[in-house]
Image (cartoon, rainbow, N blue to C red; front, top):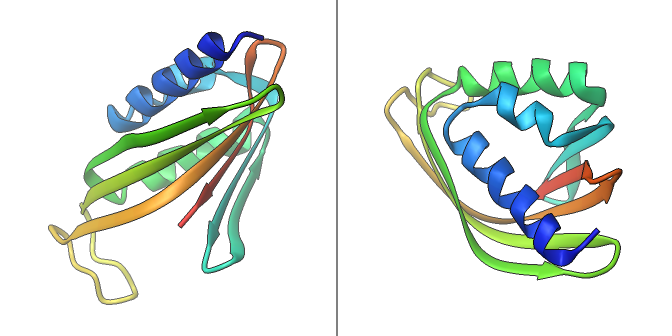
Length: 127
């Protein structure tokens, strides 16, 4: 798989994510997709396969009225890709940690991608 193809898949994924277009996101994934979210050095969310990912994505989408990931850096090699992102989200609901609907979340992080069969097979978000 060419680096340009990997970059295009990542761009499509980010655009679909920002637009809350879960169906489009799913078309970019290998059936065995694994998603992990790591915060403070600990994996706190994991989904395996398209069904688990879809369920997670739908639940997560309900938390935000707006969300936007902006790629600030991209590195691609033969086996994986890494992006640096600026994340901005506006909460749609009150959260147990005290954040309220309408509050903005601004986070810098990185996402790691692996590929299989011309699709994304692994994503790990780290913040």
